[in-house]
Each structure stands twice: as structure tokens, then as C-alpha cells.
Length: 269
Image 1 (tube, helix red, strand yellow):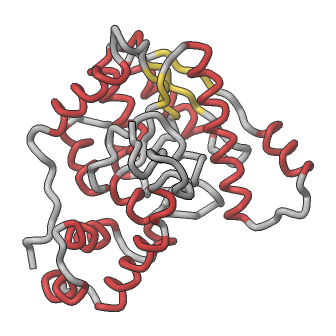
Image 2 (cartoon, rainbow, N blue to C red):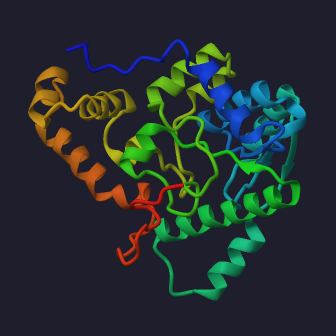
């Protein structure tokens, strides 16, 4: 039951550095902006960007909502200072209140969380535009496959340095990069409401999630993944359904085929 365990490629750090330099480094780019949440993925992304592009070409932005703990803000600022990158904090409270006042009928906590995620991305792009920089996304492969991100929110970015690494691989990378222990040990969360965690909402730990997803990547059937991992078949099937249902998040909006070459179909660049 051990062959479906994604391991961190030995070339991961070098390949991501090269990727970041190609997209956001001179002469083609002026650097990147990273939304710093206090979580593992954003910390790893900021560290990789600092090392690849230089601290002067990386801006870390904290975008705390009213429920974001001051202690976590302080820890995140200290992390940015330790990296040597510029950082700034843009409190979201007034903007969130204005959005909720504009649509008071919207009360679902997931919908409200998605609104906040899209507000964060709006502000990151405003700052990126002013500085002619790219927005560096922090999403990982597990989140992309499960659709565990907000469409046009944290999913609306210019590049995804961690996009081909499962969450467990990112954790291994964090150890390699010597990311501080408190960040590595913090439970992954979208921060939509108090007590919310990724694994609690999905219903499985990432160690299990990633073995299942890695099995799908290796073109194993659901029955084969179940037999190899020992995970209940119902759980394997539930993830397969989730991956299929969220494919729209990984694609451009559908366009009807009318011309000789159509964007997203046979005209991709």
C-alpha cells in the first residue's frame, strides 16, 4: 500500500526558480506580488520568489479581514521581514462591510467568503498593475484538482509556482526550505469562518487525499486506488466526483466554435 505516495522531485526548487525567473524576472518582468495569509503555501511561494527573483522584486501583501488574529498578522509580518522582502497590510474590514451592505440578501457563509477572496485578488491586481508585477498564486495541485479555491478569487492569478505539487509535497518542500515550524504546523484553512479547515471541510487528511489524487494521475481506476491505498471505495469515488465536477474551474469559459481558430479550443497562445 505504499506505491501511491507522491514524493517531492529532487529538481523541484531549481525548476520553480527557473520558472519564476522566466515569467517574472528581468528582462521580461519586474517581479511578483504574493498575498501572505500566514499559511504554508503563501510562505513557501514567498520564499521561492525571494530566492529566484531577489528580495527587491517581491512584495508581500497581508489582506486581513476583521476576524484575522492580530497575533497571526504579527507573525506573518515578521516572516516577511525575515525574508527581507517589502510588505504592506491592507485591512479589508471597510471594503467587506461595503460589499455586504450593497447585497444584504447574501448571507451564505461560503458565498461571503468567496466575495472576500475576490476582493483580495482585486486589491492584489491593483497593486501589481501599479508596480508592473505579476500576481504569484499560492495554490497547489491538490486544491486545483479538488476545486478547493475561489474562481476569480485566489484562483485568479498570473502564475502558479506550486501548481504541480500536491499539498504533501509542498509540506516536504517547506521542510527543505526551512520554513518556520509554526507555519508548517498550522492547519490549512481558507479562513472563511472561525474553526474552518481544509481537511475538516473535505473530510479527509491531505495524506489520504494526495494518495487518491496521485492514483488518478497515474490513470489508476477507483477500484485500483482503493485496493492499493486501503481507503474506502466510497471516499475514493467522492473525490473522483469532486475532481470531475470542478473541471470548470481549471478551464477558460466555454466558447461556441464559430471561426477558423477559437480561443481556448484550437487557438491557445
